Amino acid sequence: MRILGIETSCDETGAAVIEGPDQSGRVRILSNVVASSVEIQAKYGGVIPEQAAREQLRSIIPVVSEAIENCNLDAIAVTQGPGLIGSLLVGVETAKALSLIWKKPLIPVNHLLGHFYANWINDTPYSIPSFPCLGLLVSGGHTDLVLFGDHGKYDYLGGTRDDAAGECFDKCARLLGLPYPGGPQLAKLAEKGNPKAFNLPRPMVDSDDFDFSFSGLKTAVVNLTKEKLDVRSGKLPPSNLTPDLAASIQEAIIDVLVTKTVRAAQKHNIDQIIVAGGVAANQELVRKLKVQSEKLKVKLYMPPANLCTDNAAMIAACAAFNYHPLDKPLSLQSNPHLSLSI
Ligand code: KG4
Ligand code: ZN
Image (cartoon, rainbow, N blue to C red; front, top):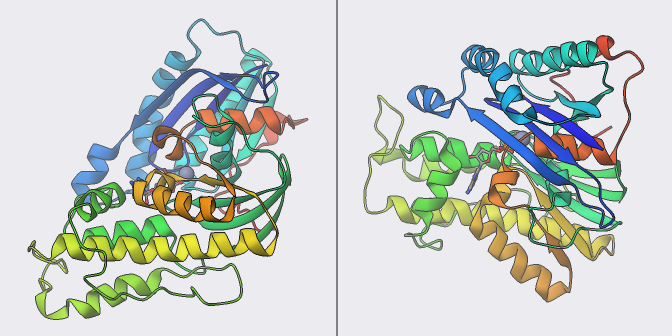
């Protein structure tokens, strides 16, 4: 089966064609195109929804055209939500129009579930996961732990009560005066710093649930550095302490993520963990998860960095394993509030 995936939940415009699943249970990428408006967002220090949607309107047809070149398609998959409504509308309405004209089945995909499916793509350097497995999603808008029993079948264990892990990376990076998108920049700076230099809180690390809270971490950094903050910009001027602060922030976020993930795997007697979402591109998170899972003899799966962040291949892959075409494609509505918790 060849599926065209379309992804426009945030500031990226993605289209990809995948083929599969094959006998080994993986899908293969035939094309994967992502157009990002990150340069414009960087200018303003974040995503301006209206502007992101306008850029997506401009790029959706060229991006889809490039992705489908010389491809015969069997179906179309599109991100239904969650995300920014203006952005989602661009992808969903385009997918509906293509489904109508080409007379192809249309499969709506939950973006959050889609992230996990990057682990079933053959660019991923590991064998594929089997069930049951524990899923950790760490993206810009979501931090969730779910227990998969099968494709598309999962129990929700917990998630963030406020900011997501990626959001915390981004907000702290902004405070440190780093350009958008802050997560990778903070991670880069952290390489040169001492993660033990600042004693930052690990919110909810000892709570006996699988929820997270990251909003207090930024406040803790503000309180710690109050005297040095520039009053007008609210940012810290660069100093030789900035790498230490970046490393300490990163370690606090990662400690909580790793501790809770490992605890969930132990509690549910799970020997496979799959990680997904933009923050899974963080090499220090990967390293710490590897150390812990080797200790526990748990097998760890995670996509390569380019498939951790938003892309349409994971959306098409999700549809290949959860093939539920709509009876009435034109009735599909974007849903900015879709979640994994039911
Ligand atoms: O999954 P994603 O591309 O978009 C959402 O669905 O939200 O995740 C984007 C998030 C951003 O917060 C970004 O700063 C973060 O992932 N991120 C990272 C790294 N690469 C991306 N955070 C920390 N370290 C990284 N290397
Ligand atoms: Zn995402």
